[in-house]
Image 1 (cartoon, one colour):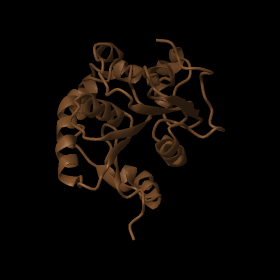
Image 2 (cartoon, one colour; image 1 turned 180 degrees about the vertical axis):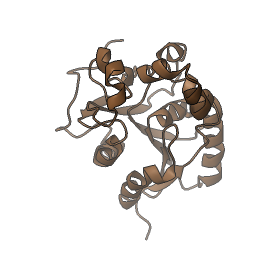
Image 3 (cartoon, one colour; image 1 turned 135 degrees about the vertical axis):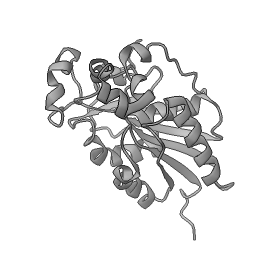
Image 4 (cartoon, rainbow, N blue to C red; image 1 turned 90 degrees about the vertical axis):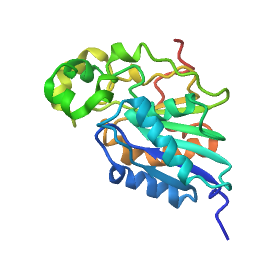
Length: 231
């Protein structure tokens, strides 16, 4: 007998320069809960965000089954922007909920600092230039009405000591992305975890599952706002 949640697909998207193995633990937890899961790798270092989304869309179309009544997203870092691009395109059928972990929605101050460095430009490619705070100001996503977004942000930065001086002017941050950068207009819930940017993944599985099932995060989670932020 199939699990009752197996008719719901969760698309898992990694961040820039990462890969499917980095998302394996999170994918395992989602599968164990009974969901159908597509841990999707995409060429984050070669393409811009729009083309990464087009690549991901084709992979989703090849994977999805007629029995999948909903398509949810769980994404990390730049993968969150790929997910938002996909959702805004209206080319994902039956979108469900989305959990965005450390989304650089308003850009990364570290990308601002490094955008002109030749090694950064070479390694991180066109998408790396789209992560600056200036570039992100030019992007607005027209998301489907009723789409429920949950955001998980980090507030510890020990993993990235080289960037502490760059990030110290931003207030709370996870070493690469400031807390204020993770604010997304219309997000249904927003919590913080005292972990750095990459290590958030190991602490986010339970919170992600709760949001996918309930449309809100666990009560004991830290919320940086007492009400929906005003933008």
